[in-house]
Figure 1 (cartoon, rainbow over the protein chains, first blue to last red):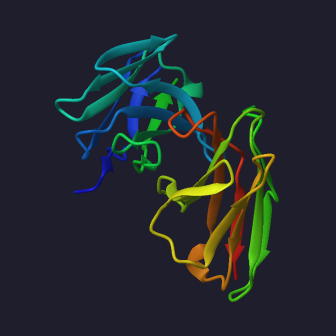
Figure 2: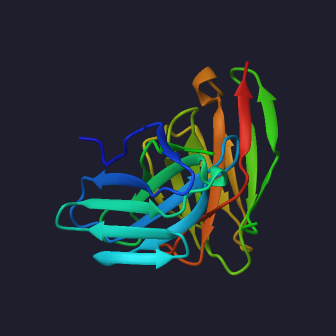
Figure 3: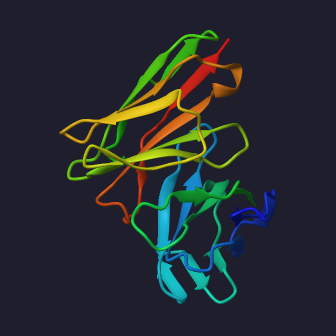
Amino acid sequence: QKEVEQNSGPLSVPEGAIASLNCTYSDRVSQSFFWYRQYSGKSPELIMSIYSNGDKEDGRFTAQLNKASQYVSLLIRDSQPSDSATYLCAVKLGNSGNTPLVFGKGTRLSVIA
Amino acid sequence: ETGVTQSPTHLIKTRGQQVTLRCSSQSGHNTVSWYQQALGQGPQFIFQYYREEENGRGNFPPRFSGLQFPNYSSELNVNALELDDSALYLCASSLDTGQPQHFGDGTRLSIL
């Protein structure tokens, strides 16, 4: 089983809709979870971090974490064409300081105007 | 703008050569991590440096090596370059080992 899994997409949503991006991870003791946005040809940009079960909101973005199900998601409300990018889920596996950040392959999101 | 700078932006090398990539971390950040990102894949962890010591290493051969300097800037060295080393090399810095990582713009390395 891969350590961090994401649907590669593409996920197409109309402008103004809610985009829902999902991620599962293998290590039950993981404590830190991150979402990065990567535009084509650019480097990843941190958009959300979440450490506790439940929802965390920041503007149009909401991260949701369910440690029992080993599942983390990102919701983008009022999707805009400028949100079209690849979204990378990253998990700091384990619970010690020197465990690496493991990335999924990313989900490509396309917001259609 | 993350404050993490990488150089060079692009580099072309041939098989068997050696390369050094450089990274300046964001001010106040003592931890630097290096990643390799192949086309269509997520970044793969190479290694991390914390206060000048290697603090974790991914599944990369010993020809991938690194350094961190007292000012927390870092280098990634790759010896005996292979065609499969062609990728985007990303450096990320963080306040500490468990804190969110912020990426530089990357170095795109092409091996001919």
